[in-house]
Image 1 (cartoon, rainbow, N blue to C red):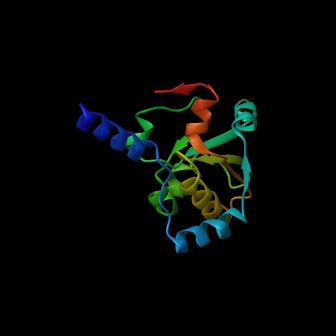
Image 2: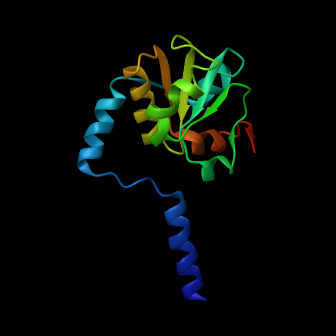
Image 3: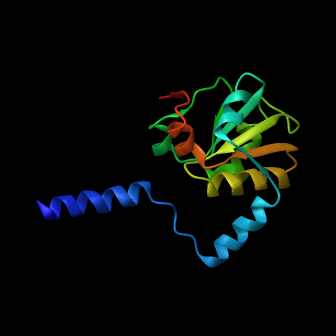
Length: 143
């Protein structure tokens, strides 16, 4: 019984733990964060009906667990953002539209929002504390 309990504890810790970031990545994150503003879950929720486009920078297996419920959602994994952004984003939206980028916790969305700014998008923010905080705040999701 102790082995099962220990296994469940370790598995749960891995699933819900914050990412382990190296010193170099932490530095890059601080730099990226200085270029973009964050919004709270409450502010993001209040933006849903205000022509704000949400960009989910998580991976496809994470999308299966749910996404922010909005009619204006672009799903694009962080690693493909630079390659696919013109096709997936500019097909329907402009660089002047308002975007909120989110991931599970925060790091990927900060990097993605910063990259979008570098690519010329003018109104980009990231969701503070990520999708986990959205769920914790009991805001609607779609599956």
